[in-house]
Amino acid sequence: MGQGYVLKCKNCDYKYTAMTSIGMLFPIEYRDTMKDIRDGKLGEEYRAFVDENPDAVVNLDRKVGICDKCGRIDTLMELSLYKPLKPSSEYREEEYVMPLELEEGYIKCKDYEHRCSCGGNIRLISLEDEGDLDLLKCPICGSALEICQDRILWD
Ligand SMILES: [Zn+2]
Ligand SMILES: [Zn+2]
Image (tube, rainbow, N blue to C red; front, side):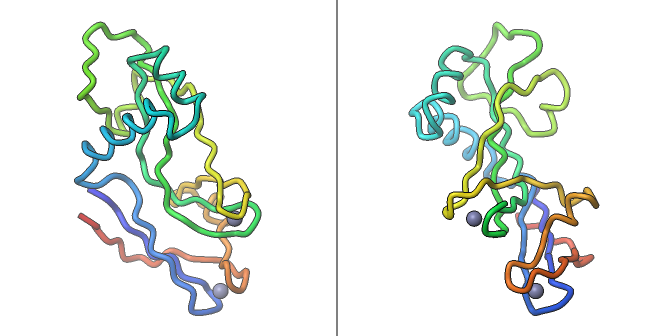
């Protein structure tokens, strides 16, 4: 179930609702994303990697990202690629792996480079991490943002 956070500027009226984690549509999103990777929509490097590693899995955890150039805040899927530590012989194309399962038994092989429409790099941050939270600045006035206590469950 997805978790939502409301980020509020300490100075002006700016508010951003971030829907993080994963939702009910996860199995469908997983299947669609793997298809996009195989079709080369996430780049030739990604396509080649899953081609050479049929047991590769993708991390679809949703995170808050911030552009290092224009400061835009967005919610994005992580999209890093993993491989099982032990090669699995029973790989099936319909299978999916939840982001939490990746912490054990999988090794990260590729980080997806998220790009903003302005050309800047998007850095993914964790809202549970205080240091990361400090990086978030209001895109309007530049003041610090804070998380409102209320969490929303989005599906
Ligand atoms: Zn502000
Ligand atoms: Zn940007």
